[in-house]
Length: 193
Image (cartoon, rainbow, N blue to C red; front, top):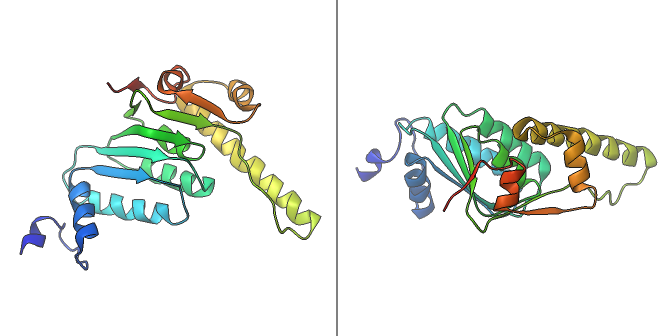
């Protein structure tokens, strides 16, 4: 059976083209994160890491191209990747904006970007629509402050820059960076030529 050569022991799935591609990438340690960060993405990455642990992969290579999205989901992905026992090399291959910029920071091994990649950081934003009571608005604002604090903790912990520096950087809104500027801010370690 051809599938016994690509599937780790104990894994049985309904085989289709996407499944084969998933196992091929997993067996080579490739994790592609493309598109918006959406609810449920962390479950797929959790499953990927479980399957990858069955292979003798030396490192996980994350390719990231995302405009951002759900910040809670991005933090869940961040936590899963930080908890991975294998070294992770993360590469921005186009865009790592907003919540996606948190994902690139998880790579303790190597954080890199292609020469024309763009990164963007900003303060957390949440539109509170459909809130009927003022107390709900206050709770939503409090939750935003907690998440903003967590994100600033990650930024400062991974880059060596201070909270004040990042607050000043993002005070006027979105802060777009070239790969070179992202390297200056220690969001990445190097630019891949």
